[in-house]
Image 1 (cartoon, rainbow, N blue to C red):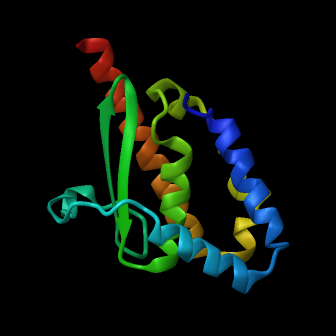
Image 2: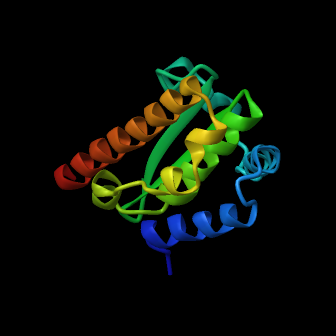
Image 3: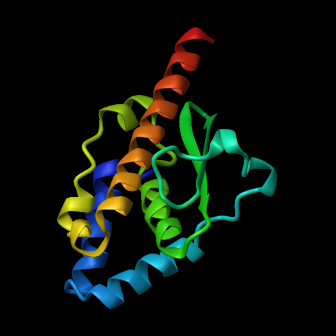
Length: 145
């Protein structure tokens, strides 16, 4: 059974709590998470799939499987890839409606603003916005099918 968005966020908060706010360890851990992201097909790394508003290149796609949104993502930088991997982990496999209405509280609770700069922070918000837009489009598709 799929975990809820809240359960996944809570487990991320627990994982980061172990790092105790150590910036170097946190950055290393985020990069490690990025390495675990499933490989994105090169054919999906197109300009249409680039998230606008990110300093680094971030590619993001969404498909609907069994009425749930499946995200795939990649980035050309290790930290950003780790950040997008957290979002994919939280939001992939969820219903479009749940993604649209969710309150993502884990970034604040893990103190993300302390270890990513303003530019990355803006990019992270752009990724969230894009994922919610995909969910909205897929929800519309579900309703119209």
